[in-house]
Length: 408
Image (tube, rainbow, N blue to C red; front, side, top):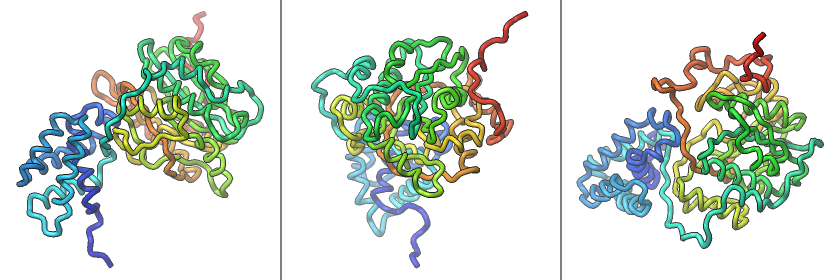
């Protein structure tokens, strides 16, 4: 039996964790991928940075300072990792290296964020396509039909007038869903825009099989928006995919999911293990490769971003019968945060949730606030009532939920 401790000790993994801590500590965009997850592990990351700065090796200390001053410099990140690898691989490290190894192992045991340096990206030959241009080049047009299908993909969406990044992202997602190996007539794509008015109906209505508008003048309610999509768009499809409008999928995304549900006992799954949240430049490259150049998938190897480990949301597949059995998503959530975790906890109570390792990536956009002005997370009200307390017999997806009652 091995006498190695039950924690990470591989030098490459420890070096990657050390570099990640420097990047996350210095780059607000990187740690903004998941602010709560950052808060819960920030002390461990900062301890790793202090351990790096205390090393006796002046080159490693200088490389740490260089990366800390320019956390978006992937070349600096690779230089630091190269210097750390022989130190962490030494079978008899000095006490300062041992302290660093212990600090990075602690990061690896509790952090759900791992920053990933990229490679130099070539300058594009042509400017990036706009949302309208991406939608004008769909590989297969939507069928706009209500005939029986294997699966329905529901995409909840909101974007303000100046949110060009979110528009580009949804257009790219729809372009990727139009380029699938599964027969196009066998799946339905539903976009549900929830806002005070249908800002983007003209842009997206003809690019999906069904566009729905869910009127809501206040904070975005993803849960209710998804429920609207399932009740008024997805049914009676056997399978439902809840897909955020910034998750870029590969060409076999639908076909692979449908095949998985043919396995006995399968009720729900996430198609990914760790989700790579791309930075702005990497997002542009991913859209270009998948949607403009027609690649079957996005090669993640050279793209810069942050891995979010085993996230609960972004994309989940489940049988429509399971979705209905648990009462859909909890519509008490309003604003960003908490709703995905609650949903999959309840789904897994009734049906097993599997995980796979498909090549999906998250496209960059400006982050929505996850706390109110007083600093309280939006999900605290539901947290007080109790996660997983949404009643299974609640009416869901009512289009008049936020419509004021008529005054007599």
